[in-house]
Amino acid sequence: MNTSRYGSHRSGGSALVVVQPLDRRADRSSRQVDILGLEVGRASSTEDLERLIRRAGLPDLETTDLGQVEWRGQEADVWD
Image (cartoon, rainbow, N blue to C red; front, side, top):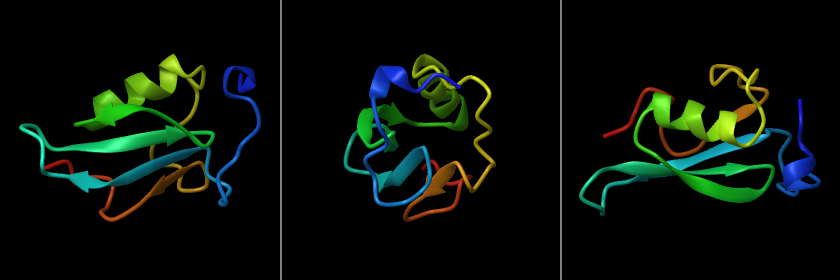
């Protein structure tokens, strides 16, 4: 797993990926995604989240792994 692009993990928890609560204010509901303590983008679906994770150099990370992905506000299947 390549984490050098983002430096050391800076969030308080042990999850590499933190998916923030759903934001319904925009035209399209989305959730902010933080990887290794840095905001990397917004996701409107599991596919969007997986794309951000791959782009961050973590292609083997499973979004269902609760030790690696922390879901805040809503469960993993809530996108709108």
